[in-house]
Each structure stands twice: as C-alpha cells, then as structure tokens.
Amino acid sequence: MSEICWMSATELINAFKKKKLSPVEVTKYLLARIEKINPKLNAFVTLVPELALASALESEKRYQKGKAGMLDGIPVAIKDNTFTKGIKTTDGSKLFESYIPDKDAVLVGRLKDAGAGILGKTNLPEFGLLGITDNVLFGKTVNPWNTSRTSGGSSGGSAAAVAAGLCPIAQGNDGGGSIRIPSSLCGLYGLKPTFGRVPYYPHFPGWETLNHEGPIARTVEDAALMLDVMAGPSPYDQTTLPQYPGKFLQDMKGDIKGLRIAFSSDLGGGFPVDNEVLEITRKAAFAFADLGCQVEEVKPGWINMETAFITIELAETLTANEGDPEKYKSVAFPPYLPFMEVAAVFTCRDVIRAQYQRYTLCEQAARFFEKYDLLLTPTTAVAAFEAGEMGPLGPAKIADKDGSPSAWVSFTYPFNFTGQPAASIPCGFNSEGLPVGLQIVGRRFEEALVLRASAAFEKAHPWRQHTPPI
Image 1 (cartoon, rainbow, N blue to C red):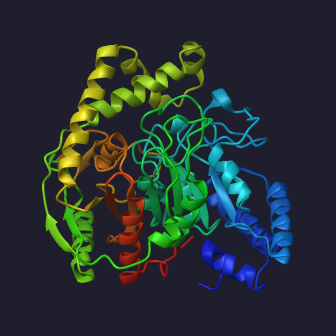
Image 2: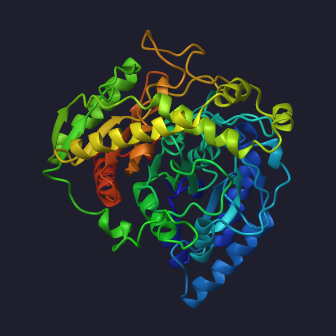
C-alpha cells in the first residue's frame, strides 16, 4: 500500500500534514498514471491537468499555513453528467458534446471548497440510462480486473478510475444502481445516501425522483469523508434534507453488536442470481454473526418494481429530449432507439401507476425495517460480463434461469424508489477472479449505520490488499 496510486484519501491527507508527500507530487504522479493506464480503460473522457495542478499548488500553500480543508490536495474524478464550471460536460451524448456549464453543481462546489482538485470527467452511458458504460461519443469503459469485461454503469468511468488507481475517490450518481453496480463489478465501496442528502442541482433533465449523488472509494472511511463534504441542504434543490446533525466520519465508528440483520437472495421476487455470486454474498452476510449480529435469511415478497422503474426512467428521458426527436434519433446510442419508441406510447396513467406502486413498496419496506436494522443482498445478480454487451450473456439468462434484460440489477433500483441509503461493499471474488459485491441497505436517514456496518465488515474482511492486474 506504499504506492501513491493505492493510498486512500485519508492516508494522503495524513502524508500531506506530515510533509511526507505534497499535493503537487501526488497530482503529477496520478496524471502520469492516467496517461499510461487510461487508454486501456477509457475511464476518463476529459482531463484538466492544468487546473488540477493549479489546485494542488494552492493546497500546498494552505498546508504550509495550517489552513487546509477537509479534502485539501486530494485529486477527485467527476462523472460526466455532473456540471463543472468551465469543463466540458456531455452526459455521454452527442447532443451535448460541446456543452460547457457556466456553474458548478452544488456538490462540485463543496468538493472544491474543501480543497479537492478535479482531475477530469469520467465516462457514462448516454443520459446514465444503463448498467453498463458505453456511448457513441466516447465508446465503452472496461473493467480493470479484466479488460474484456464491463465496468458496470452508469458511473462506470468513475469506478474504473478508482479501481485502477487513477484517483483515490470519485463522484457518482445513482438513479437505479449507478453507484452500486460499478462499485460491485470493480471491487470498490460505493454509497448511495438517503434521497436528498446531497443536492442534485444544477443538472441535465431527468431522474428527478430517483437520483442520489454519492461517493465511490476504495475504503469506507474515504466514502464517509467525501459524504461529509458533499452532504447538506441547498435552497436550489427543494428535495434536500436538513443538515445531518453529526459527522459521518465519526459516526461510522463503533461496534455493531446486537444488530438485527436480514439477508435476502431474491427480495422474494424470484429473481435469478448466479450461483457463485449467491454463495459468496450469503457467506459474507452470515459473517456478520461473528461480529455480534443476529442474521436471518428472509424472503420479503415485496412488489416487483421493474415495470415502474422502466416507465419512469424512459418517460423522463424521452420528455427531456422531446425538443428535436428526429435530430436525437440520428445521434443516439443505437440500442436506445427501440426503448424510445416504447416510451413514446406511455400515457400519464402509466407514470401515475408507477408512483402508486412506489407508495406500496415504501410501505412494505417501512414495515420490514421495523423488525430489521439492515437488509443485505447481492448487489448485482452476476459478476462483470463481456464489455459491449447490454447484459449478461446477451439473452438475460442467469444461473440457467430466464430473466428480463434488467433482472441482473433487480436488487438495486427498489431502493431508489424508497430513497433508503444503500452501499455496495466488496465481499469476495468468483472463480474467474472477478469482484463480487454485497449490498447493505439501511433505514432512511441512517447512512451512519450503513457506514458503521460496512466499516466493521471491512475491518474483519479487508479487501485493499487485492489490486487489479491493470
């Protein structure tokens, strides 16, 4: 762990304070590594080395004066659908291939104010619609553990960058699993906070009621630190929550003895799961018993939200781009076109029906969490599949069972509807050496408990000694 590329943000900050490393030295090192490694991955699509180095120099001055911020000198990657003032932001679409925002997203401003330096923007599928990362503008992003496999999505560029040691932390967003899916496939810790914990403003139209902004990191501690910086209300986003009363970095500490934990292999919906993934995640879930928790396997039997998710996702995307539909058809990522045709026949009743189903799911989840403190599931039903495919094995077949095209992400999108905090934590590798993630879900507003459980598991079952062959 002595190499700069594998140091955590927390370790780098300690090294800066002790003058063992400098922000400029680290930034130069990572920029050189990006130049060497990124062509193999396509994680970064826009780099801003001059801005990154200028920020690092200012951080050095603040350390010298004893006035460093919480993330001072830490290089960070920003997903390419998140507004960055003066830096191209494309949303993975040719519609916005030259768009340069005139203001930062609130979370970007907060990262800058804390002293973080932006290295550049990371790849995503067009409009963030898929669980893979590919688009007409930049092409596909691959997985550092096996470059023939997908990095996941939609924050696949951010996850690939962190997993490959191109940066210690990255920002992602999650409308149906887009932080947790690539974190699982790339062997990282990714946290979707409670809906509204981090402001979502300004932004491209879409994902209004499902999107959550959050951190992707190699350690739980780094994710908590990043969340402390990004979280908090904004008058520009009416869905943001009041200020969290504590500090996630402090509240993640402590034991978890006595917690009531449920593990579900399919949420009671009969979703197929790869046999190896199921075995690895079940073993990880029951390892919480060794940490003093009560663990029980359950089948919640919640309402299936797949149709509702697709309805809202596609209806919002189509509406956001209805100004010039013929132009969009000529530049769109080709696999999107059939979905756009489906979305065009949705009615207002379809959308409202999806919201009614959301109320049912929220009620079911609230009742479930009266009995249990945490719910554990596989993050994804499969490990990373071939890059360029829309899903595992082309036809949606998992563990020799037929499933829908989105069956492999059936564990993630329910919690975008409920707004609960949910994390993906590395819990092992399959026989091909590919990472497997365990999802940890908590009650609304209880990110600290999710972080504490994650940190306890990380301590008992560390994963940072494993680095990808890239």
